[in-house]
Length: 502
Image (cartoon, rainbow, N blue to C red; front, top):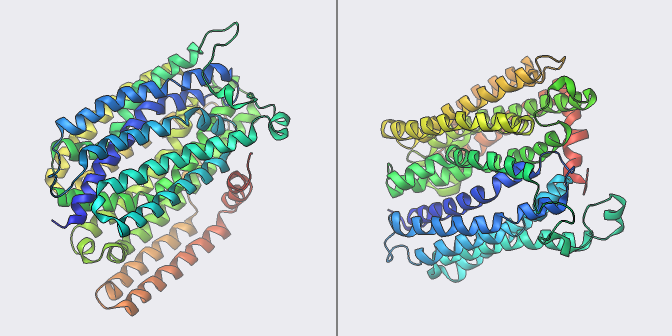
């Protein structure tokens, strides 16, 4: 197997350790503490959020032992420094948890631009360091990726600390009645005349915490199956991870920020667990309209990715990794993943609304649904992988995501049933948009058969030109027919990322 795939698989395991640790340590706290927007005693909330750090230490101790002693360790002659890299990736996760109170404060007060800038700067620093070390000291192996990950989380923490150092106590903070005045207020402390933490939030956190195990299985289930059951060899796992990272870029950089931002919006506008008729009707109307537009937006983006991703998967992998990726199962994997992205998009928005509106009791009941989904997903992943190879993981993800979307859409339908609003109409794109997408799918498929990918760069450029023309036609059709969606993007979505606060 090429050394690249050996290192890719090891990096795959290390990032799985990192994502598992941070998700289990903080996800439940984020969901609970962002409920209700800014209507909290923030001293109690900050005390609660600092519990993510000792919880992270506990998870790190457990997961590092699993990664070093229960899983197969790579050959040290082929992949040196694996043991120290496991410890450094766990350390990077704990370092990121230091910014958790700042992150929740920023999200609750809609400091959207801060999150975008912090993550962008951290990613740029990570990429630059990786390139420099790979060129200048390739013998360091996994130390390179470990150092880059530590720089990434360090930059995240630094950006948030620097921002709040400047913001707290400023005229802008005072004019907005920001609940904290100085950096010392971000440290845990006693609350005069009140309990140390808000036990209502703590109980809600516990409900989300039970759910976080199951959601992590549904999110990273195929990685756990690959890592613990070894249903694919290292080479196949390496190709799958490369394709997965390429395919999920849109989800990470477009859909996830939308989901995070509008979860806060829905949690702030809606009263958790309260019947729709008992809430302020003007706020319910705003939530319904925003949900409808968001569903339409992610559906259109997802359809565009599905149509063009299917026809350009082979070319993308050929450009990215040469024949090593484009000659095997890689193109088929990426084609399937481009279809899966559509389901990811709809599920992200529908679930962010559902989790913002659910009562604590509904969250507890949904945990039972999540348990059933998790078990069925793991079984499907195992069975379908033996039947269809790596594509089986994507098929299992699609089936699982379809079930989750069905549950969320049913909840939304019931939630608005006794009202005049029908936000699920956002899942009906205009006939002209569907016609443009259908024509694009046909033309780009024909173009792929004629021009891609063994005839040199001139034919590849011809294939790209056909795709560019089709994409332009689709975008023009969207602009002319989906006027409400265009207005929503201009007035609601873009300002969130163009201003400091909204």
